Length: 438
Image 1 (cartoon, rainbow, N blue to C red):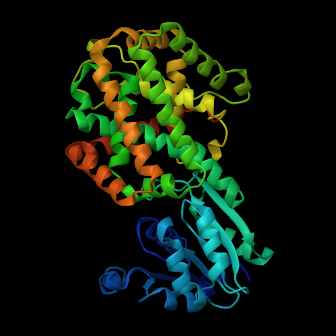
Image 2 (cartoon, rainbow, N blue to C red):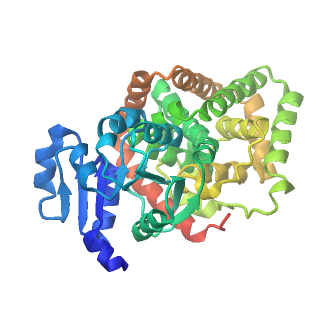
Image 3 (cartoon, rainbow, N blue to C red):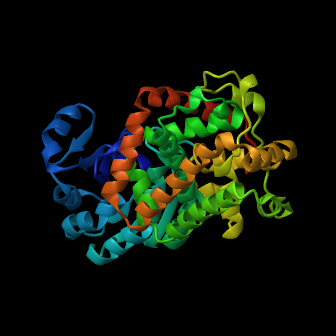
């Protein structure tokens, strides 16, 4: 059967019609696949059916109806709900179908499929490593072949070709470890910034401590995260078994460095920072090309009302702690770049850390500010407290507290979130066009 015949005959199912489910459905529809069956919560059935009645996408009442008729099925639900949803709809899966999921934590997804799906059903999971507003072309797409015939493997790959993503084959354990290394701490670093600013009632674009290239990235990326949905980050942090180790160490690095700062233990502080930088940015990474962010580029994307010329030195505690964390856990942040969220998160964080540590004068300025400038101690104290708050929430898997804390900060910045998102998108596009591929 050629692919045009497949597009007429194969039934595609999507259970869970949130942002990513819609992205996939629209991509399949645009590529000419004729039979796309979707469902969401029962109470959304009538409104969704009306909304998509002329699109070629078939809105069904529930996952049982989708499962009974579909040859390829994607579960597009939150990681915390995957077990319950597969338990409900998995037994209705069509004979000889192939099933996968889009959750960001694959261990729970695979366990649910193995537990509840019929044995005559294949399991082939995927994970588009980006959000629903990002163009899929060229982005990482992880494929996890749990149990799957060659025929089904080829069929699903032909379907996914319309995304034009860069496919990566991994096991579910490899996927979860890599996403912990490249995402969990990155998100913690940025959401702690937002929390610290909110706790102080401070908008960073009004402070000379947050003017200039690196600070532009910090502000834009923090606000970009807070302009997204909280549950994406909560799931990555709380449900990934590999994430807690990194979260704990980052918070520990922040607090230990801050203690050295306020005690003005110069020699110990400098030795710790320099040792971490030498390891993380050492010649062991000679096979990687560096990100090489440029001052002129970063200065073009700013929310600050403070001229760059009035910039005051900053300790960059968040970046010092991130490099210290990577060093302590022996994580090479240049590894696994193929399996990360797009440049908006890990690569930009790595880029500004590299920017700081590879400029000796800039690093020395940050160290001197950390040890001697008492005017920034209040900011750094709030950052310590914020990192500790988030570590405790994640450690206790307190999903309601996570949601409350995230939304409070998001509301604090709400009048500039859309603007920041647009500016960061422009920054991402510029860097994507110019970046040296890792």
